Length: 88
Image (cartoon, rainbow, N blue to C red; front, side):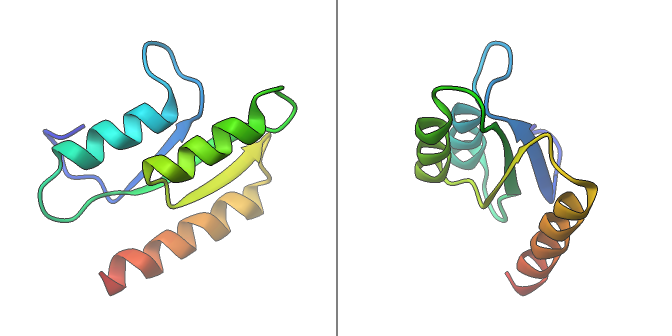
């Protein structure tokens, strides 16, 4: 991910080999200059959902969406990301 320049990263809180918060921390630590806007997807029905959300924000995510997310919620998060990116 650091070899390319991304404006937005959308990741699940649980992905193979590395969870979403770890991915966010890793990218933010290895990025010079502008860092991507992170949106993390969280399964609210999972028993560890609250802990995953807290860990996500502690790792530096910018926004979270619950799974399954509504298309309008995703569009709103992307619009917010666009505004944040344009004002950085």
